[in-house]
Image 1 (tube, rainbow, N blue to C red):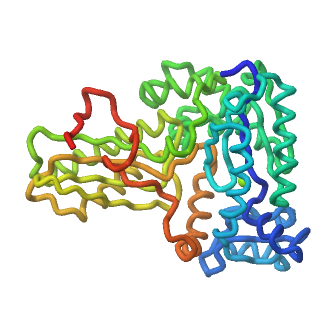
Image 2: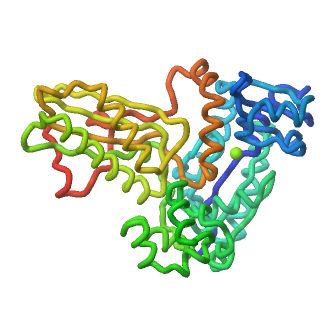
Image 3: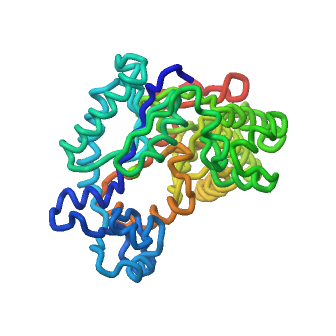
Length: 400
Ligand SMILES: [Mg+2]
């Protein structure tokens, strides 16, 4: 937690729709709806002109058509969005070496690491100039939050929408957070929110009042403790440059090769749980589940499955990992097993899990057509630099 609001969060406004409007002048000022146009399609992004009619992300496209029949309905064009995104990210990189993109249109920037003086005035001036530059270069608007932590910067940009800037001055965090829903806090995905709801905890203030001991009882030590700190407004997570945080994985090497199928399945489930714990400790969620299997002869393979949306739910990761191991022959013996999650996002980015899942579904087909490579990070394994691993004692590193 810093004494000056030098952590910046940028979130572009109605990104896909705005990019379409910037690219095609005839669409400007008109309702634009981007998403899946098939019978099961859902809205990925609606322009603000379309939102006036009640259209929003994750809504069934059929309903969007009823609400706003005169809108332009478009399939996502990821090549275009990536180009605009690259231009925006390039502007962010002029501010600091520490830029952490969360998606095509969203990123954290550590202004202090870029030499911005740690004062409200200096940070505000940088943010205003950035917003003007983004508009000049891309024709799009972006909203910015400035705060002393990532959590609050993100809340700030949300409050700033559309086309605004909100500075959350250090010292005001606790009061600001109190009445907010607990889902506002990083580390609270859908599964955690449900656990808390059943315990009668709905707001950040109630999370605080529950106390650390109760949160640890409900969520386990690591998650409970970190959630309590977040509820107090104490978020010390650093801004991490993109390359450093693509995936989280855990693995175990076994003293004796595993040949029993049930034991292999059990170990995979255990690793999946451990991996989700790491994910939650990092305040993140992920979309692609990866398993790694090294066999008796040291041949190593990975299998992955991309979910419909990011998750922090241990059951979901466990099930995906179980499906993946089902397809792998292990009877001759397994030396090492690993489970990883990639395609990471901050929890709060996917504030409405269902929304993200449905939007992802809507764009999946288009994405497949437009992208040679998915948005998932590389699979876990020695070929990936700097994997996040369990501490010593639990996982023994294999010699390779
Ligand atoms: Mg956005």
